[in-house]
Image (cartoon, rainbow, N blue to C red; front, side, top):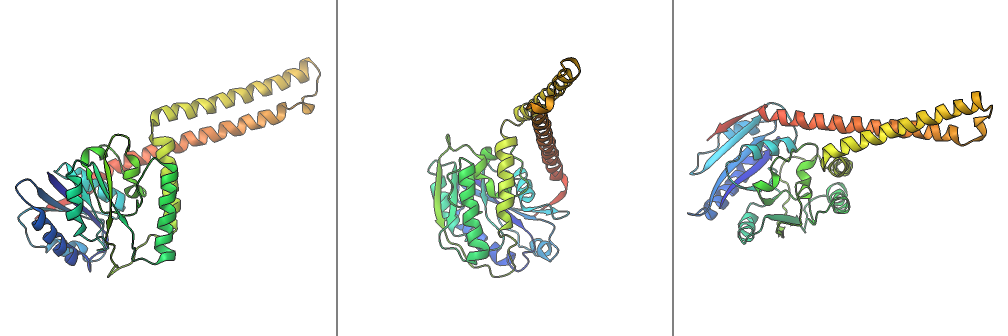
Length: 314
C-alpha cells in the first residue's frame, strides 16, 4: 500500500525543519517493497521564511512536493490542494506545528492495513491551555457528534489515515478540514480510533479558540441542510417560499373581497395576521434559498482556487 502524507503549513519556519527530520525517520522505517510514500507540504501563503526552509530541504529517496499558495487561502483549501495533487490512494494527514507526533504513524499504518478505511487519532492527554484550547475543542467535538452521524471522539486531531476514495469530490472550505470524518458515511466503512501522543507546541501560536465552535456550527448547518441532496433542498426551499407567497396573496384577495363585496370588516378576522405570517415565511424561505445559492457559489469559487498555487518537486 502506498501513502501520500499531506501537511498544511502557515508561518512554521521554526517548526518545519525538526518536523521534517522526524518524518524522514518514520518514512524510512516504514518503507518496504509493498509500501511507498510521498510527502506533500502546502505553504498557505506564509509571511515568514517557511517556504525558504522548504526549498532548502535535502532530496530523499522518495518524492517530496512543495505546494506554494499565492496567498493565504485557508487550511481547508490547502488540504484540498494537497489531496488533488497526491498520487497515492491512501492519505495521511497531520499538522505542521509539531504537536502531532510522527512516530504515531507507525502504529496507525499497522491498524490501517488490517482492512480499515479510516484510522483516526484522538488526544487523551492534551498539552494545550485548558480554557482557551482544550475546552473549546471538547465543546466542538460534542456539537459535531450531536449534529452529525460521526462516531469520532476527537475531530480536532489532524493525525489520521484515510482512503482517498472516501474524500472524492468533497470540497473543503471554512473549517471543513476539521470535519472530514463527519462528511463520510460510517455505515459502510471500517473505522478505528487510536490514542496519539499530543506534544507541547515549541514555537508559534495557534489561532483556534472559542470562535472555532461558531464556525463549526455554521459548517455543520451547511453540511446537513444544504450539502446533502443539495439540489433537492434548493427546489424544496424555493417551493415553500413560493407557496407562502401564494397563500399571502390569496389572504389579501380574500380580505379585499370581504370588504368590497360583502361589506364585512376583515380586521376582526385572523386574516391580517395570517397574511403577515405568510409574507414573513416567504421572505425567510427566499432568504434561505439565496443563502444556499450563495454558498454554492462560494463552493465553486473554492474549486477555482485549485489553480492558485505552484508545485515544486524535490
